[in-house]
Length: 483
Image (tube, helix red, strand yellow):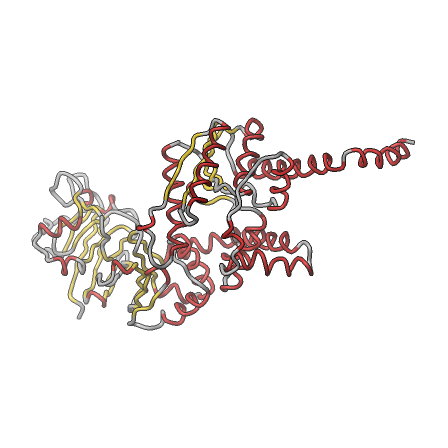
């Protein structure tokens, strides 16, 4: 009986208000997707800054978060807008429009204006992206805000997967746009479609601005969006959802292999600073792990690359000389023991070296034409220790629990010399010892695997590693010419 009543009333119900029902269903789908994202990735009682360009996606994101503010536990909302000044007065109108949205919601407004003279002649897109995220980072600190939300949608995810397949990518590349990335950047709309957002805005009578450049198919992403994806959808209406699902599956697989990749990076990659790092050649014995790990490192360093760059690197690493180019001003040099990566501003620096020292024995360091010999004593030798030989160091074994390495030093690194009052800039210390700049770069240091310098052969031991009256076990390290 109840079934008859439902079937009889349903046609009347839908005839009376079909648009209202569709609106409620659409809003429910959008809200449920955002709430699910928040439960999975975000902490309760958090402040959020939303990046709003003025387009439909970002405007919708802000209004959705305003509507869900209490349910999501958002304590404070702000808006960040970047005026790229690429479209003349329209760019200024975009900024004014977004400012009004913020004022209408009582949200703080943050504006970044790109100075045209600062834009590089090449690589503008990557440069502008870096400028945006640097601005978002500053806003998060100034707010302060726990999260910075961007309006990437399921369509953006599908486009990103296609673009990376076109360039050639591994499993890491197929992950596409991450739901959340370092420094609190979140993408709550990754499973929501652009069309649903636009229809929701129109139904709510919420305005947004159109960017005419988004229709220019001379840009590859716009071509994928307006030409390639529609062709796929003609054959498979759910193509966008399927491509986004590929990204979800790739992320799940990546999480499974992430410990392997991290272990590879920890073992074979040495980071010097933001513009310089090294990869030990022994790591290339496993080409599959090396390729995926290097992709991860390149992305973290914001090095633009395609599959061809990774393939070339895997071939070139067998060489012992030669400089090779990467996008964005990066280069790499193939040495005997390692491959050195650096930005062009660091060209000409001394080649990197790093040798893991045997815990009790001799380690040859052919690149520096010496041998490091370590001998361990369970207790302090009965005879008086001689500290007259600058190429021999006696150290407190209890203060050095881990493995030692002989390596290049890093710019900005600090060292506490024996007898000094505290840490000093290592470059300044070497300068005070009368070492010329070109020789300083070639100076090697003995340090703990991931930290403190314990000895600079020929100069000084580290103050915190010196032998004291309380010293028990002792380490003797000698540096001898390679013979």
